[in-house]
Length: 149
Image (cartoon, rainbow, N blue to C red; front, side):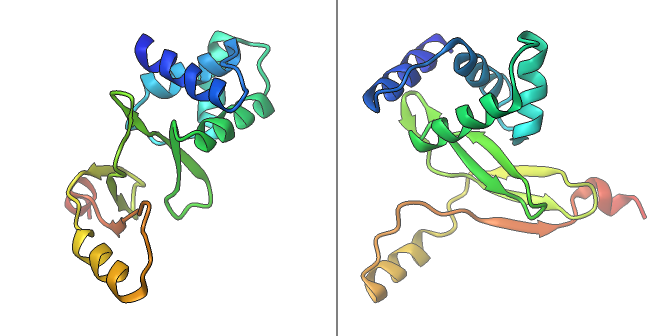
């Protein structure tokens, strides 16, 4: 975690910004909750446990800054709220994973199979369009909800 925080500080320094104590705490919360797809409000509530005087606006600004430098990704799972996902692994930008979203309970299941390589290649050739990233969200019913009738 220390290495990732150090690398985050370097990314912020590159855009003439700083990794303040509040920003570092926000980043730590994201790192400690990898894979949970927290909303800004959820991040704020966890940060507030450690720093009671932190404001929601401070957390929002930190999240936007982290997104700007590629530390995190914002995803909307169809509920109108941005959810944040840590975007670096071993100092490199992660290829975006994909999500299965249960329409009954809201459970989010990550999967890393890249099913879009062929589509990306076809789009690139046909439209001369360079794809930087993509997101795939599949909505359905999870196995737990399918059992409950």
